[in-house]
Image 1: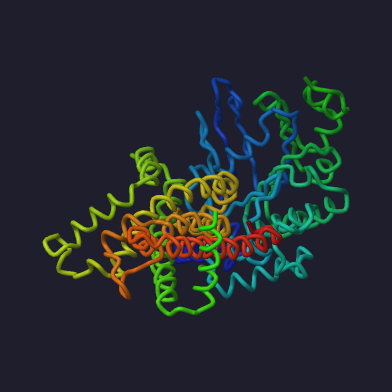
Image 2: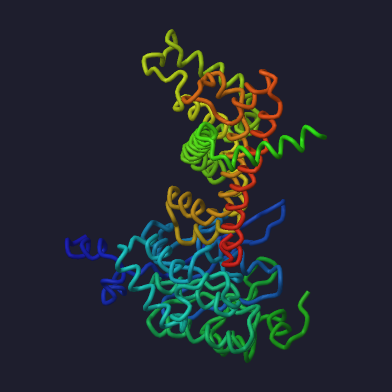
Amino acid sequence: MPEAAIKLLDEPADRRPAARAATTILPLETRSLCFEAGGRRLIDGIDLTLEAGTRTVIMGPNGAGKSLLLRLLHGLIAPSAGTVLWRGRPAGPEARRRQAMVFQRPVLLRRSAAANMRHALRASGLPRREARERAMAWLDRADLARFADQPARLLSGGEQQRLAVARALSLEPEVLFLDEPTASLDPASTLGIEALIQSAVDAGTKIVMVTHHLGQAHRFADEVVFLYRGRVEAFDRAPAFFDRPSSDKARAFIEGRIVL
Amino acid sequence: MQDFGAAFGLAFDLILSGDSDLAEIILLSLRVSLSAVFFACLIGLPIGAAAAIFRFPGRTAVVLVLNAMMGLPPVVVGLFLYLLLSNAGPLGVLGLLYTATAMIIAQAVLVTPIIAALARQVIADLHAEYDEQLRSLHLPGYQVLTTLLWDGRYSLLTVALAGFGRAIAEVGAVIIVGGNINHLTRVMTTAIALETSKGDLGLALALGIILISLALLVNGCVMALRSTAVKAAYA
């Protein structure tokens, strides 16, 4: 590897946005990914390749393994068999550092909103001053600046999730995993969060989102992974998936019929 | 019952008179027990948190020992420390026997397992809630520990309070390593034991009432602090 490239790799991701393409951690691939718990195979031999530049939406009925797949991809749980590869290699420190996740129910620390942001930024290795500045900048972008010193856990449900999204985005991840980020929110809160996510997409972040919400899937999907009982039932470009789904199960799901 | 009425009267008189001997005893009691709890927290909180967070060989044994040691008999701890600190003992050169420092050490030994064992439970519950988020941020182990200790701060205050309750009420260990020397190592509990054995039950009871009031006061302060924290959803 030439010396210049090595130097680039040593720099934090945010200081080399131009070099991002050269040092991408994508594509994200899974090979025969399996996960078993209690003698049941919950994820059953998934092979996927997720490329940069597309927004991936994971859909499927309850219990299909959507959240589980997201956790396997993010490395929160270890697969029973198979592998998750980032640009052909198992996740190293660099790949781990450049992905973030937003959970269905935001986990906020027992601190102020700003302190929640700073905690994540400091954990990512940012010096104190920079962490403080970036925290404020992102609170501002998430329209939460006026709550900076408020206890995070006293914010409304929508504000809490917006804070969680802002916290994930402030880490400037290359890949952002979202597990039904608006599942229990009203339309106005959903809109605010979708706007934040879209701004990240515009800035070049790859998103992988689980959603139950067909409208949201329409708005966000470039491609859809349709899971059914731990298997990939369909993996199509979005227009094709919604217009003429390649699987009966997916068609029934889109048409709002109950998929058993 | 007449005795109790008289004892309450005497307790009030004692407090109102501003007796300097009594003040000395109360202040020493507080100094010894608060210092002991402070050092016990310094040692016990990280141990409890580590036992809650990390998987390591012998973890179950550590938890078992911690739980069992919550019931350490104070006189036995006092005896062990006496053997260590006496002139013939391995730490005799330090000349700590019959000093307030020895009493602080004794109470810290008694309280550390309580704080570690209770903190383990508090931190384990918090860890269950934070685990995925903290792993998503890929925090190194020691930062997980400090994050959880800080976020559990108000619940841990109650843990420290349980330790304080044990320390301030304990007599067996401090009387052995402290010696109940007037103006030097006499605390509330040893004074009560002395007055009782001398037959001055009224004074002993009065001291007892003051001791209980003191414990109530400290508890009240901590609970007030905690309730403000609850309002901020920090506890």
